[in-house]
Image (cartoon, rainbow, N blue to C red; front, side):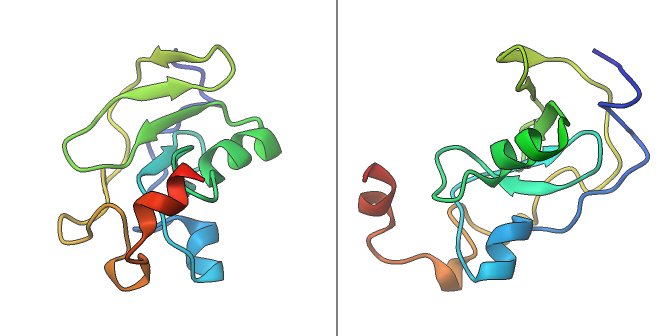
Length: 116
């Protein structure tokens, strides 16, 4: 897929963490980057599921993993892996930022919280 409304290679990510989790002081497991607008949201294994919420709110259906060493794309509409070009830097959150993160907000019982 290379629809210019769904994948824009000139748009940088919105930041180094999930936009909504940063606003509320929450934490995330893994991060996803919208290929259309750069919005960084947390994955569906995170408490907030903000990347999926972003797709539902905007119709921006293609996202890319925002984890170091991962370059795969996902199409929310077709629920399939997708292909895409290299997006504008940065291509992941900083290596110093752990997953889950950010380190100072992740509760000690985070694994239990995600199973609930």
